[in-house]
View (cartoon, rainbow, N blue to C red):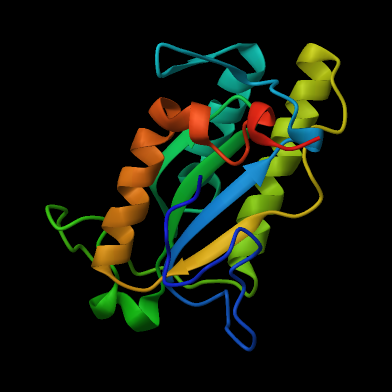
Length: 184
């Protein structure tokens, strides 16, 4: 179940003519091939990562090491998908950067953004998880072709998405990505 985001559907929230290289906050969802539950399981409303899930978690957490102008917000690795908030900073817009949450400090970053950075970050995570998974666990083709992204417009939306991500394991029985909820 995805949060209500000003009319956004489960399909991509990609905006026509929007420059995804500019500074901003983005909600992304990556889903496994055929929604296979390969990252672990939900037990008593808590996600328990298996080795593949730990690999996905480690790769997501390492994003800022490879993309120092990208800050991680809330994220969760679920049995068959990953939800996360990525905040991209730009030197030209540093004073107007979106804070992750009300209580966070608003410290500007001074690093330039390369074109297409959102897709580059997502491509990097998917590629690294796939490579490590194939090397360490002999599993191939773990991701669906596309991913969902949504530009976060304001603090209220950020808070709604943040809470959605944190509550996602407890909502697994209602989740749109849960194979048990997909009509055959």
